[in-house]
Length: 174
Ligand code: GSY
Image 1 (tube, helix red, strand yellow):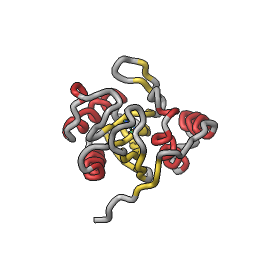
Image 2 (image 1 turned 90 degrees about the vertical axis):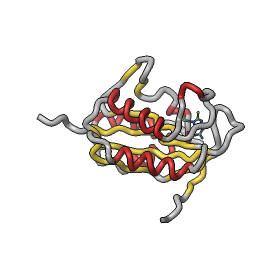
Image 3 (image 1 turned 30 degrees about the horizontal axis):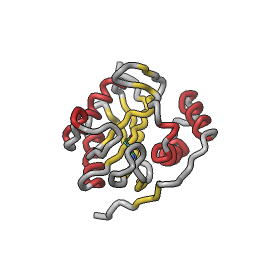
């Protein structure tokens, strides 16, 4: 029997090189990946860097996917796409600039606390560049009546989101 699909949310960001080109290529790659059945995206934001503040502004968005993969399989794919975009995790500064960041934030029905993967993502609730676009996607999620997403929506509704440092950004039309 085929595995049932589940929903997961990814934080997508970039602040080096042609940020939008890199992000679009990564989203295209995700959509072509076996086991990923659908990819949707939030609006895009240009955001002030958090962590190391002396670095270029980021573009950030959230992608909601439907997948039959496990969280670990999905994580391996995200790391491969990051590497293909020139990201070298072993050589970079913590909180520093990066060509592409694909963070697995939430995975329907799953929690993890391993050195490789923590679910939900441990810092997502403090970051406006995650919460603002996530709110938008959860509000239009067709799966919101599922218990797992209902809890996430309730927690999000109870979390104050400061929009300071984030501004809507319009992707170039081709
Ligand atoms: O954790 C993701 C990478 N990152 C970001 C980011 O994506 N956006 C902003 N605005 N600041 C960030 N600092 C780090 S590290």
